[in-house]
Image (cartoon, rainbow, N blue to C red; front, side):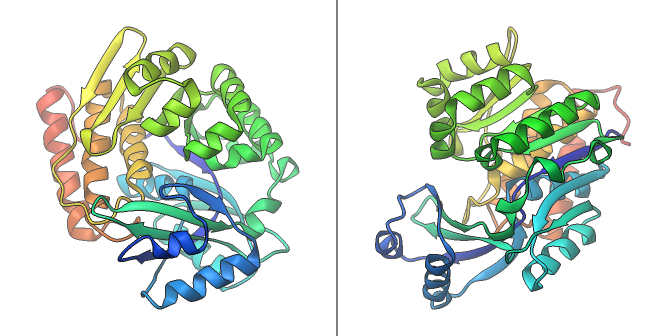
Length: 336
C-alpha cells in the first residue's frame, strides 16, 4: 500500500461547547476564524473555558489527517515540533498509538495548544491558538531522509505562514517523488499569504483541499468558479461546501459529491478527515468520484462526535460503508 507523510503544527486541541458567542466577543475572536494569541491571552482563555468543561485531544490539521490515514492502514508518518512537557509527550504517544511514525522535533518553548470554541446550531468552530514550540520549527529542521519512501506528502495550510519551511519541505517532497497535497486551512491564512499560496500551488502542489471561504479568499470567486480556477493550477481541486457536500475537478472531469447522512454535533476535524478518506482512496487508484464519497463518509462520522477522534463503532460502520461503496463502483476491486 502507498504511504503518506504529513507536516503540521503539533497542537493539543482543547475543545469546549459554548451556549453562545459571549466568550468570542470577550476575546475579540471573529466567528469561524483562527486567531493566534500570546501565552498570557491563551492562559486567560484556557481558564475561562474550564468553566464550561473541556476535552483534550492531540491534534492539529495535518495530524488529524495522518492519524486517519494510519487507521485506514496506510503507512503514515508525521513531522512536527513539540515542547519537552506533558502536552508534548501526550501528543507523541497518541500519534504512535494510532500507528503513525512520529518524527517529533523538540523546541525550547512549551507545546502548542489550540482552543476550539464550538457554538451555534451548525456547530461553528472558532480557534484561538497558542503556538509555542510549533513556531520554532524551521527549514533547518528538515532532512531529505524524512521524505524517503513516502508516496504522498500532505501539508497543513496553517504552516504557510512559515514560508521558508514550507518552500523547503515542498522541494524535498518533490525531489523524493511525492504526490503533494495541501489543505488551505483557514480563509484568513489564505488572505494574508495569497501570493505565496499561488506560487506553492502552481509549482509544487498536486491536490488542493479548500472549503468555500478559503477558495473564495484564494480566487476571489464563488465556489463553482473558484474550483475551475483551482483546477487550472493543479491536478486535482476539491472544494467543500459544508453540509451541501463537495466538488471535485481534474481537467475536464467534474463531480459533485452529496454529503453522507449524519447527525452533526461538532464540525471540528471534518475537513481533515475528508482529506484522509480522499487521499486513502486516491492511493488505491479509485475513481475521483469514489475518492470524494469516501471522504464524505468519514467526515460524516467525525461530525457526530465532539473533537477529531472517531470512536470505534463509527470507524467500524465507516469501513463497512466504504467497502460496500468500493464494491458497487469498482467490480474488479478486491479488498486489500
